[in-house]
Length: 113
Length: 111
Image (cartoon, rainbow over all chains, first blue to last red; front, side):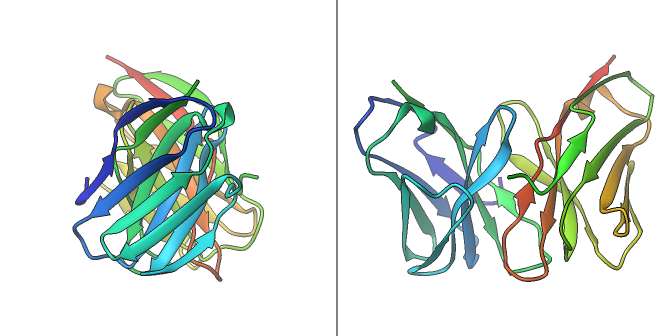
């Protein structure tokens, strides 16, 4: 898994509660990404980071926030979880910008009841 | 919205047969990438083809890119049961540093 870990791997939470997912890398890559995967939609980008404290929105950023205080960690926060955020969340890293592959973590399955 | 659209959505073949998956996209790209995902796992990068390339090979994989038609194909030759997975194309624009994924093709290779 290219030195990428995600925690937790599974989580069940109630509507309205805050949730934070963590992505940790050991590769010292500059670029980190958060995606969600839902049936029929493939992977959709939520947020990405291009350096410490440098982040930007993706296609489906509403309801999510991110933080990156150090190179190795990229946190995804659902401030108030909703059932529509039930999904599988993947973190990915990339060494450089355009023209390079991404390496994916194992995923976090989140269920919001 | 999805930049890449894979076709077919699902494909079932016998071991030893070839599998062909297609990807269409809408806007100009810097490169197109193919990924594989086994059930319950993260995506694994297979191959990257740049906009100025027309064909690329990696082992049993052959990828073509037709920028005039905004389409790509992934051919897996002599398929094996272990090739059973979902396959996704992803496009990257000239500006920006993010990939846009299609909905994927589910491939089942029967032994």
